[in-house]
Image (cartoon, rainbow, N blue to C red):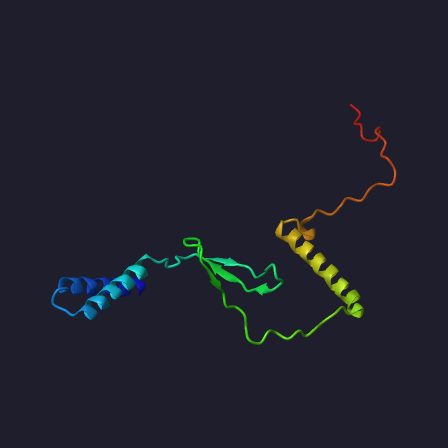
Length: 149
């Protein structure tokens, strides 16, 4: 759309320049202003995508700066409006030690379940393993294994 406006203003300027001698001075001035505006619109940066997103920071005065968009073509930055008028209300604050034991149990169960799934995904499921042979309590003598020949 910006280029269409710029090209249109250049066409109007060319038409005004062609009839420069027959029109009053204010019309010539208007044509020059339109041409200048068109050239300015055509030569400015249109911020081609992708844009960079700078994170929120704290400046040297200790004031919070909001996140900003950054154009690598021209180096311009402008605020990225992600802020809402009503920030979310905190529902929980602080630490409740009475819930720590239950949370630790849930974390251990989750870790065990993740390990089981990883073993199953790797194809080393416990059901696929051959049963371990029972060990004999005493050594087997070699003489009983020899065949008389």
